[in-house]
Image (tube, rainbow, N blue to C red; front, side, top):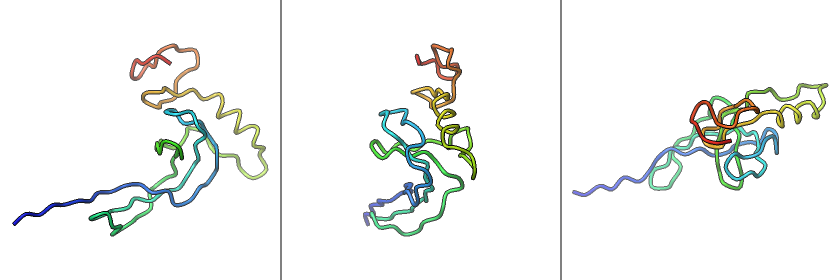
Length: 114
């Protein structure tokens, strides 16, 4: 008897929390802060889904999923200019996506050139 199993777990965006919050480290296009769910598929049919624990950054162009940024979103009453300034001050490594000091020429975690 031959049995061929096709299936797996894949992430799927369920809701956009904030649009254009950061630039994608792979392609440079605007990326969104999203809530997502994990979907179990068997033979390309969704069988079971469950919500993920925390929001992530998702690029619509290249479908890259990154962990949530190290800064918080603006609260009620705060201006969006302060949050956009915080986004622009953050420098991430293009290879490992970790936050790096802007004065460094090489990533201290993976060694790639910034």
